[in-house]
Length: 173
Image (cartoon, rainbow, N blue to C red; front, top):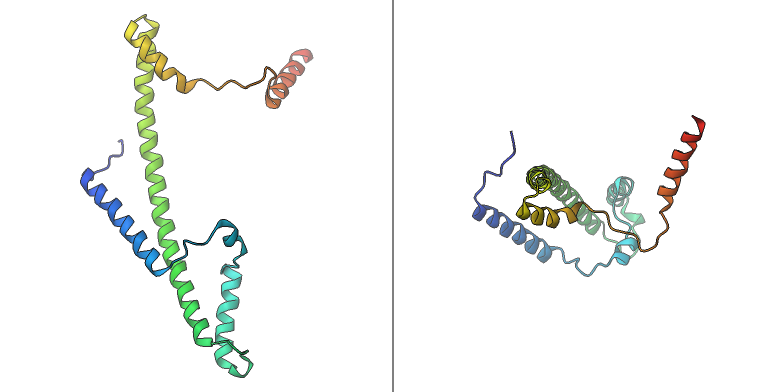
């Protein structure tokens, strides 16, 4: 049974609008749009080990406040820790949504490709039977199956290796 989206196109448009509203709302609360790729690489983040370190430090800073350095506020650390926990949970939800969308894209793309191939094979068969319109349609679709030519005349390294292996197998017999 082939999968089908049982949603009206207007509802899908509404879903896209809702997603954009979430993105806009998120950007109001967490303005990190200025962060470049280089800036991202300079950040330490809070992976599993660092998160554990931050959490333990937060507990110890409250338990032993006499060791808190100047300009350090254990309440600020607790607040950042809560933000990290919230964002990690949010990211898990977003990753789950991304996985669902990726799976749907894969399934529907596969179905669309199979239907397009069915049409292509039908046109190809009619073109072989010399139908002039089918030949024209086939020629338009055939370009998607042609491999691009390389700029030089020399074969690529994998092709040379393949040919050498084939020649070696032939000599043994």
